[in-house]
Image (cartoon, rainbow, N blue to C red; front, side, top):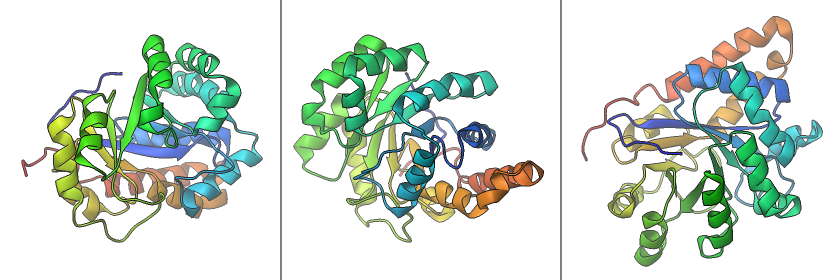
Length: 268
């Protein structure tokens, strides 16, 4: 997966496969593409999501009730393609389901089903060599996470990144945040010094003001919890035919409102 650096900041939304229902995942993905999404992050539900806050945890619980799992999430990708999703799709999964499936078989499935990239948040970069090798052989980008740590580690991760680099805005779990760290801008600028691929930022971005502020310091804005929370608020309206389209339109408008400022960047 090759993403080019452009004057437009990418919108990278996250949704959970199977939440609130596998069929609705397709509708939500199409709504986000229509809202201007450049890449889709498709989460795989897991019972012990270490990096996720309460909103994403609840989404995972709802998806697990529909028997969603790693193979089914992978097999959802060609369904998304058939229904009209054209943007790159990144699979967000914890390492244990990959291990249980078998690393080689996982990448066979990923390649066969047209997944563009994988992101494994609980796999440390220093231990990711075998996974990165398998992903390269499959022609699938292995997306790296980088957090505000030592300069040497940031340089090491950024210089070998594939697809795009996922910058963690703050330490801790995902979730909606009113404020972001003061040092975030300098962290993003430092990462961009070393990265050969687009630099995106996520974790806690939940307002249009935050998006507007960060667009000049990053190549992509990742929004997850705010969108999942909106979908949660729409609730049963998404599940009933007579109210589904209206609810999807509201979801799409919300995504467009959050990302309205994404356009040509100003040089910081």
